[in-house]
Amino acid sequence: MSHAGNILGLPELEVERVDRNDSIEVYARPKRRPSCIHCQHPKVRIKATHERTLKHTRQGNQVMTLHLKTPKYHCPQCGRYFRHRFQGVRPRYRSSDAFRLEVFEAHDGGVTQRKLARTHDMSPATVERWYQGQCRLRLSEMSNRPCPRVLGIDEHFFSRKRGYATTMVDLKNHKVFDVVLGRSELSLRRYLRALPGKENVQVVVMDLSETYRSIVRRYFPNATIVADRFHVIRLVNQHLLKAWQGYDPEGRKHRGLVSLMRRHQWRLTDEQRENLGRYLDDYPVLKALYAAKQQLNRLLLLKSLNRKKAKQLLPRLLSLIEDLAASPLHRLARTLKSWLEPIVGMWRFTKTNGITEGFHNKMEMMSRRAYGFRNFENYRLRVLTHCGWDGIINRV
Image (cartoon, rainbow, N blue to C red; front, top):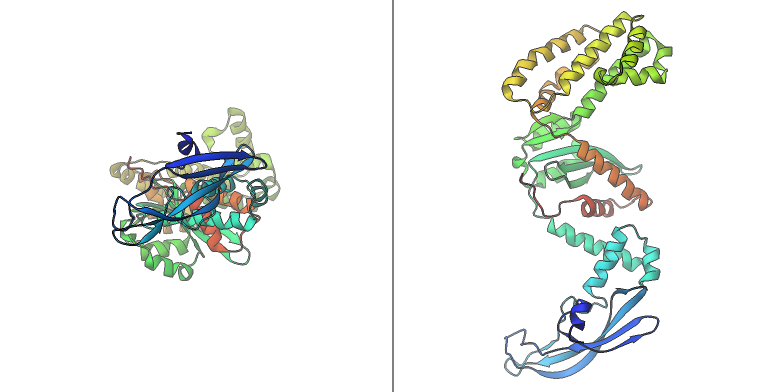
């Protein structure tokens, strides 16, 4: 019985007896008297004793209930009274910290509140209250986290009533930094003004959104804007497919041809390249646009270039954009010219918003599992608990 306290996870306990029926009833008392918590006097006397009953983990399929004899002490030196304090048990709580953590981890892992209410002999409302309490505890640990140096910004859909939310991700440590309701400068203004450490942000990765670009320029003055490579290449493909619609509407509907037109040329087999070439021979202008698109994508996919190499490639990119300006893809050329500096930034940096999109997928699964969220703060609480910073900083 000397190791019973360690087995229970509550040290300094002496187990008197254990009863097993529908549940496990453990009767225990403190091993020794503590010093006075007020004056640290080593000798105190027991004034009275009462029994605390609390739930403490599950053993197999049975809930363990602890019956703790809790002495009330009197200190002869300072004359003050205090009750015995058990490690892992908070004052006036009817469950141990281990039991609450067990419920939290089970619900966090996907077990429903209704199931936990049956297995742990509690109400679904209590499960939700404990879960939010643990989430807020984790969230409080993130309150003093530094503003990330490499920040990813993107929007995602929250609800039809509340609209969109903005996700900010620490791309260096692969953690969600925060989620804010809204995607306009007006809705984000209050949050961004109070955000500490904005001057420490060095790189912001984003899609080709004018709204987010103006927000970054205003609130992150020291940050370099880098366009997300996926969104830039997708924009090029969209403009090409739209121009294709004007030359051959029927061919544009052919899924096989659409797949070939979208792919990078070096990923086509010899047979696919030959079939696509025969089709493009009938449309010389479309063939020229396709060739320009392939050249442009080759430039856009370059990364980790030094300043000298990027400076050498810049005239090629500008020349290609000028050629597109005199073609049916003139709107694409205007967009690329407007976003030239963030696009060139893709050559210097390897970070993209792929991490952010992955978190959006995880957020959608969380929302589905909860059958949707009405309260945005509850949604934000869960997102930061699942995807937020865990206190570990990647300095590599």
